[in-house]
Length: 259
Length: 270
Ligand SMILES: Nc1ncnc2c1ncn2[C@@H]1O[C@H](COP(=O)(O)OP(=O)(O)O)[C@@H](O)[C@H]1O
Ligand SMILES: [Mg+2]
Image 1 (cartoon, rainbow over the protein chains, first blue to last red):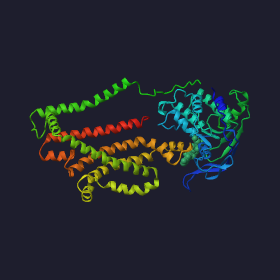
Image 2: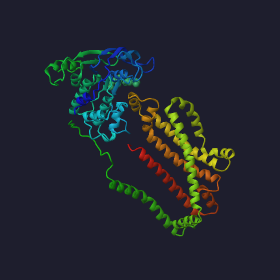
Image 3: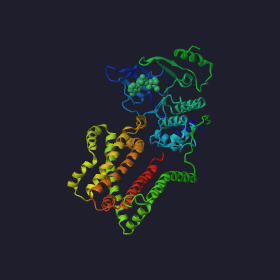
């Protein structure tokens, strides 16, 4: 059964959660010699919206996700989810880290259950494992599967709690090209079916164009938001739709590539 | 779903039982090569007549001494009392080592309080405590058990504290991001992550316990393998000396093996 149907049958919906960043700044290091990684970031993500962050390495994309998750505290400004300020780790968020970060002592299945946080339903866990192509690997240990499989398990773990806000940090970067496309559609299915808000970091412009309602382009480190591009195309999107070409060219030009 | 990824996958179990038994046997065979060669060489050396029996008894002499002591019913007594001392002293010392090591490793605050003091106590060569222990605790079991406990404590304490401190921050963060904190974080993430290091500390502590047992029994005792060493030195019974040394090697190896079995069961994922 496709994941969308399982979720529909199980009637899983999340509490809608908007994300709001208000003049957020983040510096690292001691006073006097600190580095401003993020400055004056203001952004509103509507409940159920898919926002993709693009930007050069080291510009603070991961840091921005961590601020929303409450894994870091903003130096200035405020982060709110659904109108409530984020203070400390926020369980309304599900995080998929840049690395799989599976617990090596737990099976793939039990790692996914960690993401479900006790509200485990073995049916949805099994459905998620099937959706990320890990059926038959439930009892394997993380060290017994490939890097791409581990990353997919981490994706399933991030989805398993059906969080209001899904924060994903380059979740598909370690996957081969075909699996990546499948996982992108899985993410969209889950987000659409449950109504989750998605903030995703990527380096892949095509991925951004396929997933995003809006693409937030960050400038170099400390320079804040460079541009916000709205991708106003109906879903499901055709990856090769000619209407996306001008946007793609525009984004490539932003990163210094002139087609 | 069709994945075209070619995974580096291994089967979940480590092959079938027969292959496992064969691998174990091969490992044992390799391990026995050197001891057997040593005994053969020793046997030959003792047979050359170059050495007197009190300088170098033959393997046969040592076996005969073992049989003699066993038939008089004292060998098992010595072994049992020593083993019992090691287990008790090790239990106390390793237990305290795990508790205090965990506290220091998990709480930087407790670490700041305890670490300097424990470090200083550790700097005292452990045998320097012996006279004090004898004055305070008498000459029977308490000073011996205390000395063994001291020997077991430090390696366990140090490795456990270091093991908790070295836990991957990223894994702790995953635990916290998925709603674990406090005790749940400790038992759910920190403890399993530190478990391999904790076990290596426990095994070090056990080895130290045997070392300190001999020290304790050499100093004051009327029973045990250490006593048997002193007694046979005094009566120039080199055969018994050899026997005790071999027994200590076997017992040390045996107790370590028992712990390694527990370790294998607990750390199945390693
Ligand atoms: N905990 C930290 N301490 C100090 N510097 C950090 C920390 N986390 C991130 N940084 C710095 O902040 C910058 C942005 O990092 P990051 O958010 O990971 O970038 P990106 O994900 O966009 O590649 C980098 O220069 C990095 O070195
Ligand atoms: Mg990053």
